[in-house]
Amino acid sequence: MCRVGGAVGFAGVSEVAPGAPAYNRDMEAPIEPPLRAMGNDDKTRVRLPRMAEVVADSIRSQILTGEMQVVPQLDVLVKQYEVGPPAAREALRILETEGLITVRRGKVGGADVHMPTNERVAYTLSLVLQSSSTALSDVGAALRQLEPLCASMCADRSDRATTIVPELKRLVKEQEEAIGDRPRTMKLTDEFHALLVRQCGNETLVQVVGALEAIWASHAQVVFDAEGVELAPPAVWKAALSEHEKIVQAIAAGDSARVADIARRHLEATHAFMSTVGEVGMVTAALVQRRL
Image 1: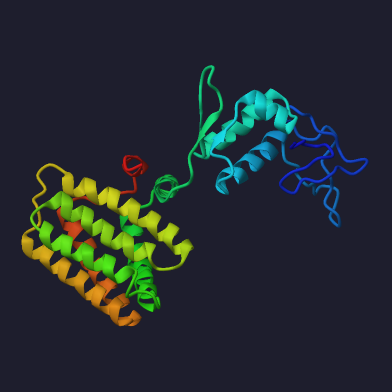
Image 2: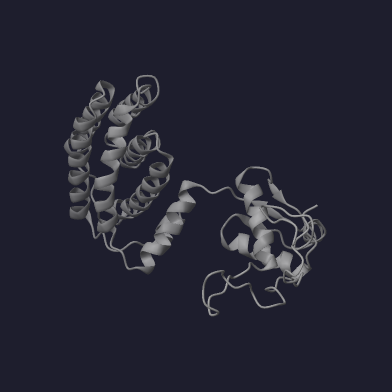
């Protein structure tokens, strides 16, 4: 039972004290005026959540903790949370807008759940960056600061010899075999840089820097795939491969300062090379969406 506004609560909602404002069970704000913030003047008020927001909060929490893999049908939600159909529908709309669910249309009802992914984080961030008319070079500048930090953190890991180093060596070997095959080389290069971030040991950096890398990679793909763009000569790819090998060696040696320096210079060179290949331009969210 997940009664909203009654004696049984959820997600921190407890029994309503006598005299507390009544709720419209369809999703509106409290029927009485909102509570005033204690200690402030009469103009300051505390906004109480609508019923739809309270229901959405509960469902969102269950999705993110893995308790809910499929959102039940509307009539089940209405009964479970003791709210009206409009409030339940609005809760689903909130979650669908957030990309956490896809509502099933027709008689089937309910909704499919989509756990957040780094790609979706990247897409959301790209929307914000595009709305701010952000240049891709701005994303590159951020990566040149943050990815070397991630690489240095990889070198500081006590278990690096059995975790990240073998994986990096495998990618370097595959890159060597793929020289001359542009699509495969680019894919392996992206994987190499993504692995440096993913194995840094800090989940916040993994998500933030990973999103920036996904944005950069999606735009780089378009630049290199453009008509008339020639494949870089093998010497360019071999030089990049050599830098990757140096990064792996520095991580294996636990030299965090050296690997950060190598990674920074490597990114400066590769970003500069891309600007000579084609127009970098502005961040475009649609390019990131294609990778979802």
